[in-house]
Length: 185
Image: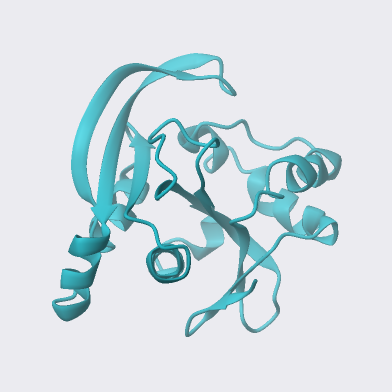
């Protein structure tokens, strides 16, 4: 499935995207703050595409002009998230290449995936989290209508081999429908 916004295509990852993925995922300002180590090779990026980004609702975030991935976004369905065990709830995850920060790209992509989650997948709630210090992710969640749910100290971050403080937010279908009437600025 391909989802579209005014500026973006959200499409399934392909192995041929490995070089584009590596170009952004090798940046130490991207992965570690989100809980994964910076990529060290195109081969590692290809493996991530095959084994992680192959999930049913994982999408490459691409500008419509060239269709090359500049980030990733996913709705993690039951069995792939520890935020909920319900089949009608999921977790949203995302990241964006640094050259594209501050242009409203990720809020645009998140809003479309939220719409997809509620309208097409019939979700009741979408959960989202960020680690302490990731103000950019927090801001995206606020812009897109998520509300604070809880803070958890000492969360395991297995890919980084450490513990962190995590903040969890949620957006319910009801809140999203109200927001469609009165958009959050």
